[in-house]
Every structure is written in structure tokens, then in C-alpha cells.
Image 1 (cartoon, one colour):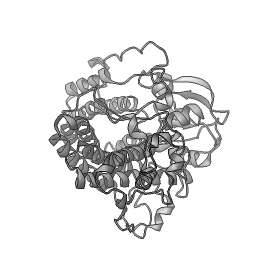
Image 2 (cartoon, one colour; image 1 turned 90 degrees about the vertical axis):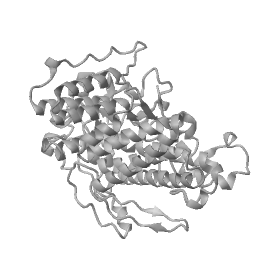
Image 3 (spheres, helix red, strand yellow; image 1 turned 30 degrees about the vertical axis):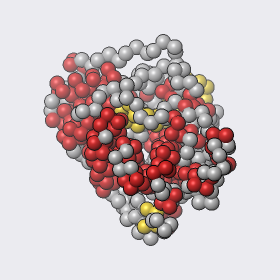
Image 4 (cartoon, one colour; image 1 turned 180 degrees about the vertical axis):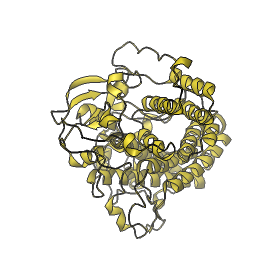
Length: 481
């Protein structure tokens, strides 16, 4: 089965890369404490001056992947000199949607789960900054490959990762996300606020470039090619172009998997989902959250099996974890991978196109192709039973029922991979659902720290107030889906 990057690429990050040239004469990094050795005065960015010559490209490649890992999947700590354990967008988008329920007391996380996030939320400031860093590092490293090794398939992979950062900004945040850049002399070019459509259009352009480069690389570019194809399909689906989205992913094998890998090597490399759901019991698998949420717990689908423990960090909320990131087959669990792009997502994109076209036969066939190849999980040594196919008699007769079936299949197959929030927003934008029939609503978790409160109106995350330091930015353009 084709897979993505390997664990060895986690040994460097953007903070470390900016110091590589300074410590090259010291000796083998493997024998040193990297977090202490590679501390630098300006840890937030990789400067262009540090990416001179082809010899630095392997470390630059690792930095791009490592920064994406922390922003997307989170970590167990030691991310930078400022941030400790980091939730990542997988968790926080899962909180705003119906995938996770807060089971602790931090008010900044409760705000997200309650759909009432303030612009001055410190938790979300850190995550936004890390996501912007991942974007900037990927774009900078892709530029260095273009200069020194333009035919290297790693260039295509890094370009694709940059494209995914634009997707995540478009799916998770309000309209108006800016994309600033650092120049060769250390100054900044401040970015203008961009709508979701603009961000997604930029993403498609990056995926197109990655597809061209990966195709030219032949077999060596196969992983980057399929990664970029899925990214392009996802962006086009967000742009409400299912026909083009289905065409973009048609050649992706159903068995394809691109994982963001984690490792036991340092806390920065830990799987953030494991850190916050198993180690500290901050977030529990949600079940029918706010009345509208999917019953992830009680269905016990093998794609999202659950294990009941005691209570969460707040000592009140019943706690459920999913073996998706803690399976006995993934030992140690802090190194369990986080999927970013799956061949089964390609089939689900094709299924949605068939649904929109009124082709029930293809719709059912693509759903079942995804089910046959879906990743399943278990704590038991014996693998879980295979998913049974959906029969013709199982298909709802009306369009609304079939839409619900599609989005339910997507919810299980893509659970905790930062897809669900974008899907809920698409149900509003593309399928004309009312937000309060899609997102959790009504009284908030009656057993938790915020009992007595109601859900707010948020359908996305706000851009942190600190972005107003950017003279081009004033506020979210709007908070609509």
C-alpha cells in the first residue's frame, strides 16, 4: 500500500532548521539534545537566507513536513520556545463540529466547543500561528527546491502540503484569512484578507503545479501525485464543482494512504490526538452532540470504535476514546499516524458527484468501494469485522436521505482528520441546510464545566485579534458558512 512520509522526517522543525547552518560544525545531531542545541533568537520563521544550496534541502523538507504535522495533528509538547502541547486543527475543528466534546475546564477550549470563540482566545492564537507557519515553511521550501533541485519529487509533495494549508484555512476559518510572506531581507509582505473561494483557488493552483511535477518524476512522484490529486479534488468539492472534483481523483487507488506520521523520539513528534484524548482526557468522542450530531459512540462503527473509561479531566463528563489513535497494532500509541489523504476519500468524492447527477447506481457503487477499503480499528488483537455493503434496499428514496447517508459515510471514514467542519459548512452553503439543523445546538454539555450555557452561533473559527497588527487586515470579512 502506498504511504506518505516516513518517521525519520520528524527530526527537524522550522525552529531547528533556522539554526542548522550555525551548528553544522558541532558534530552529529543524533548525539545531542536537539531542543536545547537548536534554540535560536527568532524561532517563528525559516528565513530565506537559511535555505542556500541544495545541501540544506533534506532538512528543509523535514521542516516543512514537521511544521505541517504540528499545525494539523498537534503534538505532545516542545513545539517551540513558546508553545507546549498543541491541539492542532484536527482536534479544534472536531470540537467545533460534532466529532469531539470538551471534557475539561479550560475556557478557551470550551469556547470552541460551545460555538462561541472569541477573537482573543489564546489557544486559537497559537494554533493559527502554527498553521500560518506551516504554510509559510512549505511555500519557502518549495521555492528552494525550484531553485536548486526543480525536478525533485519532494518539491511536489511540499507544494501539495502548502495547498492543504490553504484548504484548512478555507474550511476552518471565517472569510478573510491573510497570507503574509517573509522576504529575503527579513521584512514582511503583509497579505490581504482572502475569502474562502480565493484560498481554495490558490490551493487548486498549488495542487496543479504539484501534479505536473509529480507526473514528470515518474514512479518516484507517485505518492506526491496522489496526494495532490486528492487535495485538488477536495478543494474543488469545497468550490462546489463536484464534476471537476471527481475527475481530479479518478486515478487515485482506493488503497492509497498518506499519513502524517508521529514518533516517540521527542514530545514535539507525539500524536496530538493521543496526547489530548488519552494522556490527559481533555476531549471525548461525542455522541449526538447538541441534538444534531452523529451518534459516534452508540453506533460503534469499526471506523470509529469507542472505549469507555471513567470520566474526563473535569471528573464529570463520561469519557470515551477511539482506538483510531490508540490501537494495540499501533505501538507505542504516541506514534500513531494521522491520515491526511485517503483513497477512500477519492471514492466518496466520486459518490457525491454521482449523487448530484442523480446517478444512484454509481453513487451506491462508490460508497461501497469506500467501505471495502476503509480503515478500521480495534483495541482487540483480532481485527474488527469488515464493513457490510450498503444494499439497494438500504438507499433512501429521497435526495435529503441520500445526502444524509453520504455525509454520514464521510463522517465515519474521515473521522478526526479535519474534514467534518468543512462538510458541515458545505451542508449549509451547497445543500441549503439551516445552520441550527447542522451544528450542535441548544443546551451545552449538562455534565461539564460549562453546564448551564447554550451553544453559540459559530460555524467557523475567527481570525485571532493579533492579526490586526497586519495593516492590511481589519477583521473577518464575514462569519457565514
